[in-house]
Length: 255
Image (cartoon, rainbow, N blue to C red; front, side, top):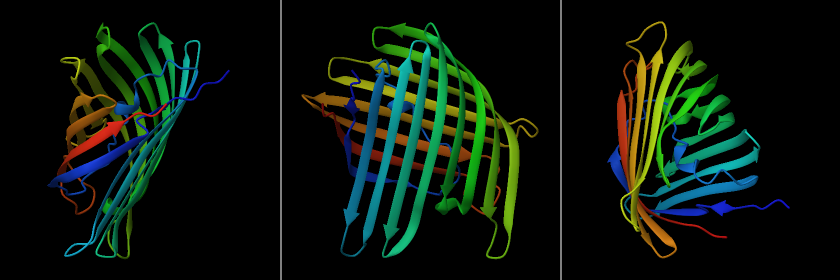
């Protein structure tokens, strides 16, 4: 009998602040990597923020994942959507979809993926990437672990350079990423995601993503704070090279 697990069903953002420059494209999916041993599972995050008065702001995002596990095979479909509207002007309406396959080798795995996305704030009409790699479990003790991934992927990006022209970018990139999950105590835990993506033909063109997150558990609720930092060394159009945000929120699980 198929059982469906709703994890992280609702995440309510209490506060978001920081410096936002909309520089590049790496999106973290590692926070939805837990509890994938079920034969079939569905995960969803919801975040939202609304302000009315001197500043009218509507912000909404969702991350959803469907996973199917069979023996050594794991197939995941991931979808993210972000919407931001300020004073009646749409700033962002961005989506990311990714199909990922992992073949388990004990605690390790090899993987392949395809991904499509658009990012309005970056004037990016599309970004299509496909590639694969190897994921290695460096350390594990109970629920604490450290993973390291190495891979290679091809990217096809199309930008609106200005009102009249577009810019096409095609690259091969090396990918190095790591994810650490650690429980400090029964109520206090955290994780860390780090991505580094390097242009194979021009190593000065690289992208970095860093996101540490801390959790504090209160009965059925988890309070969290995270900081996200993104950096692109050589943007292809006139956008800033880095941006960062801080989120405070509450996360809970149903069923």
